[in-house]
Amino acid sequence: MPWIKRNLAFVISLAVAVALLIGGAVYLFSTQSEAETASGELEAKKNEYDTLVKREPYPSAKNIELAKAEQARVAELKAQSLATFSQSPVFASLDDASFKALLTRTITDLERSAERRGVKLPSGSSATGSGSSKYSFTFDTQRRELRLAPNTLQPLALALTDIREFTEILFASKIHSLVSIKRTSIGTNEMAGSGDLLSKKVGTNSVIGASIHPYEIQFQCFSSELGEVLGRFVGASNAYVLKTLNVERPSADGAEGGEAAPVSQANTMMAMMARYGLRPGMGTMPPATQAAAPAPAASGKVGDVVLEQKSIKVTVGFEVVRLAPPPSAAQSPKAGRR
Image (cartoon, rainbow, N blue to C red; front, side, top):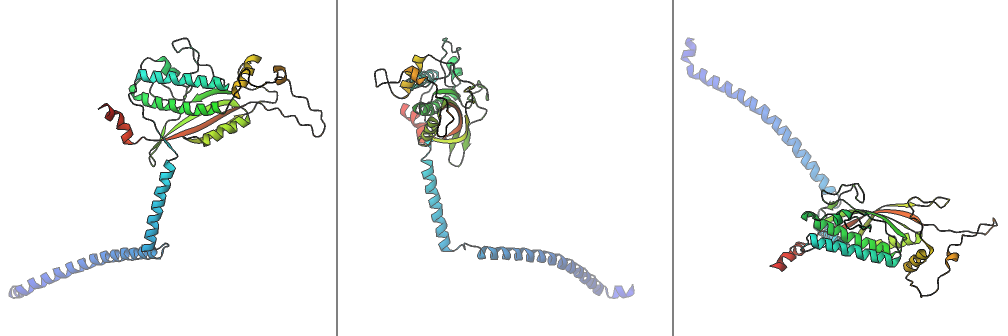
């Protein structure tokens, strides 16, 4: 103790040196661990850099210019592709009265077009309020109701436009009869998956800003007329995307489920004449007995071929792709009223 008292300054200096030595050792060990971690990250970044440098194509000035040219080509291809899709029409000042007038006018035009081309339409509901049993082209509910929700008028008018356009394709192809049309439900008063309504919903494509409207049609025709329908779908101005195609052929005895009731010979002849653009007094038509004559039975000899084409029932599921209207077109009615 006397020695410590005589050398107190030395003892204090020695204690401080020991403390500093311990602190330095701790700091050395911690920084060494951090240094090893940093060295590992640096090595990983170096390997990644070497991989990028050695990868083909190399990010040189020439390759960057080629990439920009490819981006311009993709943008041009996208613009050309969008030109094949039609835009959704904008119906200005659409209310209950104007939609009912549009619906009545469209149904009347389709009925006349079907009658002119000899296409038989399915029977509609007799609960339209006027005792009529005409086919409503999936708009039987709208024909019965007096008031419609304002937010459903534009989608209903768009669906009516779609149905009119592809139904005219069917009539122009001279199909025998239209069995049914199905569309998506619109509004809360239509139950999806029942009656003339599909269980599917209208889809959207955010890449091109388009809406996808699914439909399903069922009709009866011959195989040649089916080819005419598909050809007209391909050449149409609207973008029709075929999803499903189901063909039901009659059985061996000629029976076919869902076939319409037979009509008289006079009505059959008038329908056939209308289908092929003939009217009474234009040209000559074979007698009804010849048209209804059965095909000759096969004699069993080699070379005898008996061909009897029968009507087929076709179910087609497809989608109509429409682009959203530009903002200027959507705002044009307000600007015109101002």
